[in-house]
Image (cartoon, rainbow, N blue to C red; front, side, top):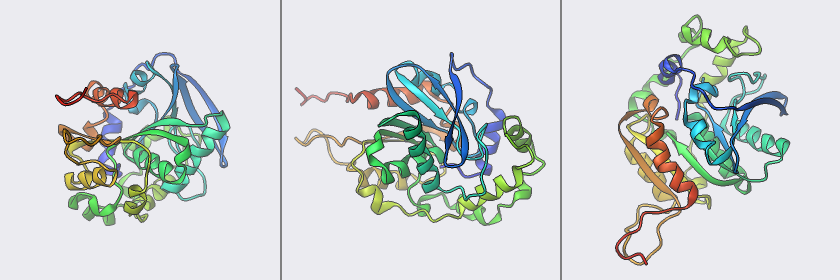
Length: 287
């Protein structure tokens, strides 16, 4: 999942791709004017960005998803064109915001595609509001901080607003922010998010929502952690032995760091598209 400084360079380096003809709008959600863009047609699908990101920095994945779905790309609290609040930024709060957004625009149930912080928000949404989630694509996600890479865990206590204030990252944030003077409190809330308890193993083990886990082989969580999550979701068993495959799936992108995951659109869609369609490769024992 996102963890602050790691993603900053990706935000600044990402170009603004053409997303076809998305329609931007606002909706009142839990005291915010939440900005979203709607594109495509088909079954509803909600896209959730990573920390310090916005809709454009998600790259071309939104446009590709809109080829087969009615896509709602959201900008969460304090991100992009959505205003910040005097309220902690936490995963339960953000999941509640997504649920309220769905109610506000009349979406009963949707597929969810989230990256990093957005993936953890989607996972929390599936835990807290399972009736609203059809299928979840969780890209670069952790369900427990113990699964984070040791180097990242060591960095968290050193985070301070001064690392961000006055940087090009602040300039990029101000381009969309409704309150350009609100960067410091926003960063303080984002740093506090890194210290929020994250230990959802028991909840993940109870999920009945199909989940596609995607991560890089050099991501911010260990490979062992990703495999443990897959097993909690019922995966990791032998196929070709007469038992049905798990509805959840695991995909690891080679030679890929955390910030390199989201820009590999063709590779991502090669995993996401058949998952959302419920398609599985046929083995020699399949009829």
